[in-house]
Every structure is written in C-alpha cells, then in structure tokens.
Length: 350
Ligand SMILES: Cc1cc2nc3c(=O)[nH]c(=O)nc-3n(C[C@H](O)[C@H](O)[C@H](O)COP(=O)(O)OP(=O)(O)OC[C@H]3O[C@@H](n4cnc5c(N)ncnc54)[C@H](O)[C@@H]3O)c2cc1C
Ligand code: FES
Image (cartoon, rainbow, N blue to C red; front, side, top):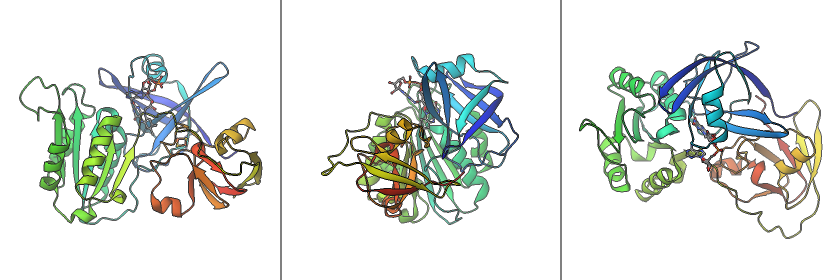
C-alpha cells in the first residue's frame, strides 16, 4: 500500500532530564533512515484491536542515518509517552512510519540571513536537529535560539547547547529563558510578547525580510510567538510551526452537492481506486476500505497524510500547516480533506 512501515530497534536509551528520555533507533534490516532536519517519526502501537499512533520529532541532525534519536517527554496520564519511558528498553522493537513533516528548511541555501528558533520544553526536539544541521552545513546563516523552560534542570539538551554556543560563538545566540530559576544566573523570566518584540531586532544581523522563524512548543507559547512576529510586520511565509498537541478538527465544511466520489491513487505499481462520500474524509474512507494511506494525528496538524491532488477538487475543514504555495501546488491534507469531485492523488514515495 501507500504507507511504508519501518521496524526500528532501540539501540540506546538516554535520560535527558527527570521527565525526558531519548531513544536511539536503528532499522532492524540495517537500512539508512533518510530524513530532513525537523521531521518526525510516527510510532504505531497495537492495544487489542485498537491502533495508537504518536509522532516524535527526530532530535538528531541528519548525517548518521544508521541511528536516529527521538526525545520523549512524559505527559502525565499520557498513554504512549508513559509506556515508552517505563516499558521500552534497549533491544525492543518499535514500528514506525517513514519520517515525515513539513517543519523543514525550504531550500538548502547558505545565505546571510537570521534564522530564529522559538522553542519551549520538548519543542526543542525538532529544533535541535534543525539548528545543528544549519550550523554544520552553512557558513553565513546566523542562528538564534529562544528557548523557554521551567528550570535549568528540565532544560533538554542544556549541556549540548552550551557546547554549541562555545563552538559557534560567531553564528549562534542562545536566549535561555528559565521561568523558575534557582539562581540569578539565567534570564529569570517567562517569554512574552514585549520581551520578544525587543529581542528580535536586537538579535537581527541581516535584512528582516530574509529572516525565518521556526516555532515549536505548547499551544499558548506558539500563539504568542506567531502573533508577535506577525504584528512586528513579518510575513506569514517567514514562519513555520510544528504542533505537538492536536485538537479535534472542526466539523466537515458544508458541501453543496454531497455525492459519492472516486479517488484514484496514481503513481503506484498498481493504481488503486476507492469511493468516498461527504461527510467522510478521504482518509477515513480509505482506511475503512482497508487502504493504508499514511497518517498520524488525524487532526490537520502534523502533515503525515499530505498528498498531491493532481485532478479534481478537495476542500479542507482546516489547514494550519500548508502554505499558499503548497496549496497552489495541489497539496492537500487527507485527514481533513473532502472530495468535491472525482479526484486523483499522488504520494511522495519514501
Ligand atoms: C508532529 C509531532 C511531533 C511531536 N514530537 C514530539 C517530541 O519530539 N517529543 C515529545 O515528547 N512529544 C512529541 N509530540 C507529542 C506526542 O506525539 C504525544 O502527543 C505525546 O507524547 C503525548 O502522548 P501520550 O499518548 O503520552 O498522551 P495522550 O494520552 O495522547 O494525551 C494525554 C493528554 O495530554 C495532552 N498532551 C499531548 N501532548 C502533549 C504535550 N506535548 N504537552 C502537554 N500536553 C500534551 C493531550 O492533549 C491529552 O489531553 C509530537 C507530536 C506531533 C504531532
Ligand atoms: S494526519 Fe496529521 S495532518 Fe493529517
């Protein structure tokens, strides 16, 4: 089917903080795990008849594709994070989808520009992979990390960031926000819009129009960062976000003429067709008919389900991640997408 599954062996387990553990993963067949900095793996678990999926960003930078790292923070009462931290150990095998996600660098250009990473808590996972990749693979880009945590002790990758600050002193600035510091050593405050509005110009070295912003953290932190950056006059196209917390998607949009539509999956060894009808999403219809399309959050936030609509029309009940250019290029999220006509979809093959 369209979805490809990896079997990953845990080859190492590292405590990062009291609540956060990194897992080092290698393909059981010895294949490389190809990914872009900022992407995530979706782990698949079975509980009786029920399948559970959770995504985890790859926190290691691309380069050593034999072993990748995910970094999981315990969510109290969380089903999967607790299971991983407490019951999965070195030697165990995890099932995962291929790396996916659009929280990545658009072009691999080494231009003199400022790249801002605004992260909080476990939001550092994709950001860490991303920023180390930029620092190692460019020479002109200036990287600014604004990183909010409660305490010094719960700051994931603190010692790595100290080392990176020393090694890349010319091109890396780290604003270390600790909201409950024990000593006066840190910027003892909680990031807010006023602080961010003052910080961004102070940290900017190049043309603001060339700056990029990557935001990952709890929803309220992400909202505050996004509104502040937009209010400062930056364009939406300069901002990318990665959501960890998925809300229930809004109800299906009203489609004037609901009728059964045919979905054709093109570009596979064998073409596949299936029927879909409002108010079922394209993904729901496929899964109900045993067609394994890729997905994770089912809430329009992670982009695992993205496909390209090469014919026909799809409407989405929400979209927080596809850019105008993506949509113009035909990209659709099948988990919140409804076929308005017969459609043909293609999937990027991993
Ligand atoms: C694209 C993507 C990348 C992700 N990358 C990471 C990562 O690198 N590291 C990581 O630890 N998690 C990451 N997550 C979150 C992860 O997928 C799970 O949602 C998280 O581990 C909680 O799952 P659970 O089964 O333990 O909790 P659940 O049983 O699903 O949830 C319990 C409750 O906690 C809330 N909740 C879920 N996630 C969080 C959170 N992060 N913080 C606070 N409350 C939450 C839920 O809304 C729910 O109310 C990512 C999510 C996405 C969509
Ligand atoms: S499955 Fe996450 S956006 Fe569709």
